[in-house]
Each structure stands twice: as structure tokens, then as C-alpha cells.
Length: 60
Image (tube, rainbow, N blue to C red; front, side, top):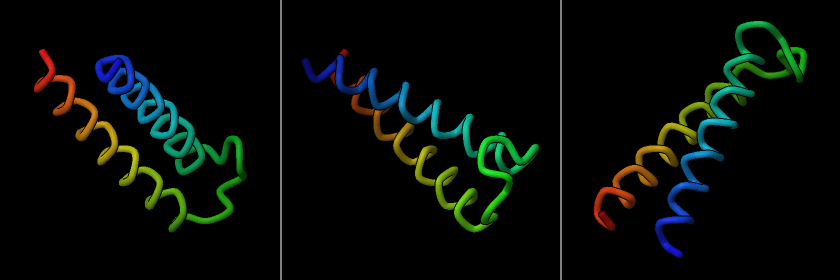
């Protein structure tokens, strides 16, 4: 179960990174409402990805 949760964390991290990177670069899907929000969510997704990756390495 913990390994599945770390894989879900990696997936969510990748989706959030994709969505807010697209918003920052192209204005899709939020029409670039706030650059600060985009940067904040990108940083949070990178942190979540790192934490999920390191947890998955410890479980292996």
C-alpha cells in the first residue's frame, strides 16, 4: 500500500507540474490568471515529486 501511495504522489506531481507549466507558458487552462500562483504550484509539485521519489526508493 505505501508503494502505491508514492506512485500516486508521483502521478499527481506530474499532472500538477504539467497543468501549471502549460498555464505559465501558453495560458491554458487558466488564462495566466496569476504568475505567482503558477510558480508556487510548480515548486510544490517538484517538492511532492521529490518526496514521493525518495519514499519509493526507501521502500524498494
